[in-house]
Amino acid sequence: MSLVPIGEIVAPAVAGGFGVGAFNLIQLELAEAIVSGAERAGTPVVLQISQNCVRYHGALEPVAVAALAVARQATMPVVVHLDHAESVELVDEALALGVGSVMFDASAFDYADNVELTRGVASRCHDQGVWVEAELGEVGGKDGAHPAAPGTPAGAHAPGARTDPGEAALFVAATGVDALAVAVGTSHAMVEKSAALDLELIGRLREAVPVPLVLHGSSGVADDDLVAAVAAGITKVNVATQLNKTFTESVRATLAARPDLVDTRKYVGPARDAVAAEVARLLGLITAAP
Image (cartoon, rainbow, N blue to C red; front, side):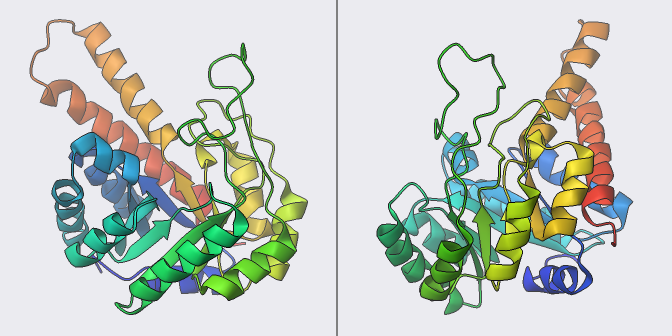
């Protein structure tokens, strides 16, 4: 149990045709909530630290050490994963700290540069037995990637590119990555579940690509479509914004009911519990056997 390599939870999922839930943290309470939710659901989970999270804290070490500690105390298998790293130096720091899985994101570069950069990161990670995820076909919503048109309402969908199955197969062969994040109709940072998934494309990617597929931007996907995406061939399902939305809604509700509160535990604690419940609910969808 507790802290495990990601292959230990992905391999059974691929064999069984079910999904793996991967959730992004920002602060300690979210790490605790994610693990608590996994324990309630009785399933493994991936605890993700993004480069944006590192930027928020000013350094990787404090948040990574905290996440690793939470993972080691868990009663279910937990993976600590570096998400959307765009810096080789950040990857090296994560490896030194003991993070067991890395998503290196060079998707903003052209294909040739993406291949070259990703191949180098995959090689250095594999030397230390660490699993590497990459992205092909940039998923929108990352720091302005594929923004919505001017005047579009907040939270509107900007799905960006689509990943080509043939190119994806060549990319995996050229880089040696262990998993591939694909662009199939989602966008990061969506606050409404209005993404239109291309399930037919997911199926073609599953047939063409010999490694597990990853769905980013899953907060914008309706529950039934999440289940359909896994059935079509997605293995790892990434969720971030939905947890932030749940946390914030809880804090607002508590403070509206009790505006006199000054002890942060009195409103952060219920928000942590709300996120744990949402993680458990989502894991029930993602990890359901076909």
